[in-house]
Image (cartoon, rainbow, N blue to C red; front, side, top):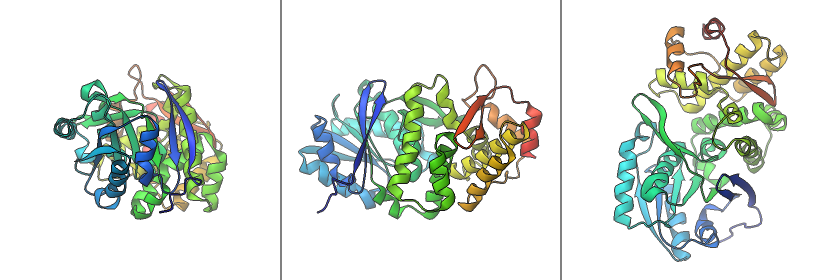
Length: 355
């Protein structure tokens, strides 16, 4: 079997607990055992996945672990945001107990963002913390949620209200996995790629406008944006908030749709709202604002505000945990490759964009 060792490139990520590798390349999935072994791990481990991913990718990872002397146990939670809950975490604890996991037993999270967040939180808290390996299988998770060490679950009152910072031992990203991703999920992830272009990579933005890019290059560019921002602010004290471009609006739309709106769709509309708001307040030139909205539309993403009452949207934004000292924070583009944090946006200006 050709595992293409030469094609995978390694990005060193600096977590607060020290550096860890991100391995990006075709075939890295089937090499999970080798990479884990080379990091000094052995023995029992848990592969956490869901019924959607399991039939496609669990076997190569399990085989690789077994080949390298691990005793892997397959653990499963249901698929979907509705299951990003403490019940799923409790179910993982039971599976970890049954698997006989110990302090040094790695947990591998194989799935999209919900799986990575939930399994990551279980790993962060079981026995006060087991080693974690993120193996994201969606574009969204690859460029965003699997990086930067944030894990957590939702409460009925709001998203991500329970969580922990947990830096993984490593992140394995195999672009080949994206071949089985439904088109709507791929586009959902592209919203975060566009976001990273607006935040800090005019090159990435231009490549998306062109519609011509090689997948590994695009992933690598988008990942490096997130890595640069997280390195500056690992525990989200300040500057890291710029990664929430489109999310203050987006989370409100998700919430009001009862999560029928995909995260990426909500973020795309959120980016469009933040861009219009920035233009209206003269923070962003009209031409650049237009380029942003045109790119979202070119990539077949929604940019129009759903038919929600602006008051309801404003109220939903108020429950967002990104508030500081009771004030909403908005991340607005100044130009492509440059965004800023604003806390003094008048409600009327927000309502105008929502109308």
